[in-house]
Length: 165
Ligand SMILES: [Cu+2]
Image 1 (tube, rainbow, N blue to C red):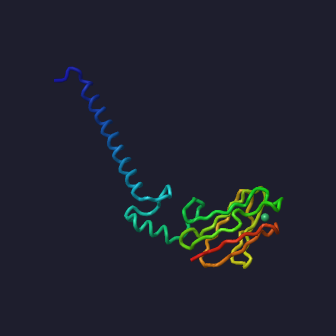
Image 2: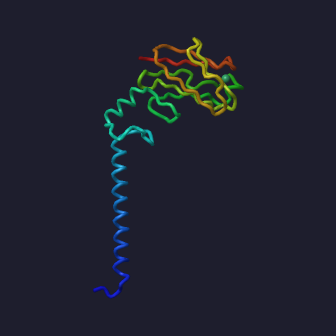
Image 3: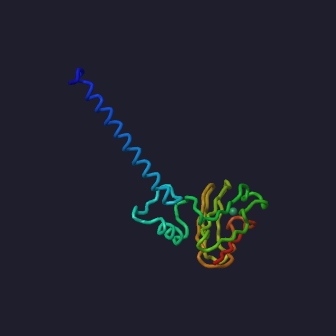
């Protein structure tokens, strides 16, 4: 017999709350373990949960470069240095970059200058158009070769992408 009628309900309420918290901890732990086991660099993997980590890795490799601006191992970066519009001392950096198909053959140019520039292939195979201040341009190279490019506005701005199989 309970002398205080309110006590059992109160105890049951606390026990229920503890069970809910414990359940949430289990779910959170399982989620962390699962996402860690995926070894996936993207913060929000959209792949279905049935995919094994092996097929995810293969899929990631075969797609060659993912769009969206998120940094990934497949991307090589070339900076357009601040001052490139005003001084022949500044241009693309590095002026030559070597990439390997299937490894890092997506190149992203980042315009760190406060003026617009272009990344225009000498052979016409790619052309960024205007890249505004702070803007980026991304191109994925799929054919081996040496690709010279220039900025349409500034004659001293020239660079080369060497693509290896
Ligand atoms: Cu330029």
